Image 1 (tube, rainbow, N blue to C red):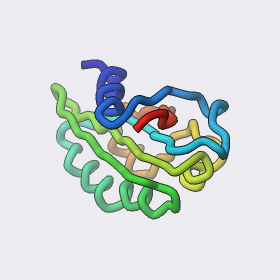
Image 2: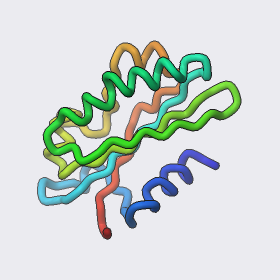
Image 3: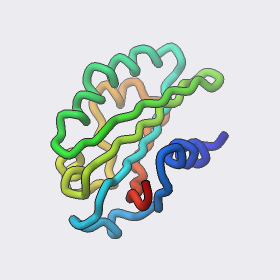
Image 4: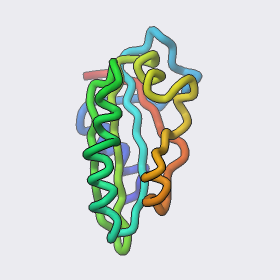
Length: 130
C-alpha cells in the first residue's frame, strides 16, 4: 500500500474530506486534519514510540483547539513507518501549534536523531461531511 493510499484510507474511515492548501484555509474554516509521516529503523521504533508517547503527543494535546492525536505504526522490512493524524478546531488552533506557517513540520531534536526519512511538509484537510 502506498503512503498516499494509507493516508486516504485513514481519513476515509471517519469522514469525507477535501485536501486543501494553506491558502485555502481561513479563520472561518471548521475542523482541520493534519497528517504527517516519518520512518525509523526497526531497532529505533520503540524509542521513537516512547518519544511520541511522552513528548510528541502530549505536546499536541496541550495546545488549545487540538481535538485529537492518532498515531499509527507499521513495520515494513528494515523500517517502521509512523503516521500521525491530528485534528484541530480551526486554522487559529493549528497555528497555535505550528506558528504562522502551517506547512512546516515541527521537529524535536529526538526526531532528527531517530528519523531516517522525516517528512518535511505535512498535509492538511478540511472537514466537509460527518
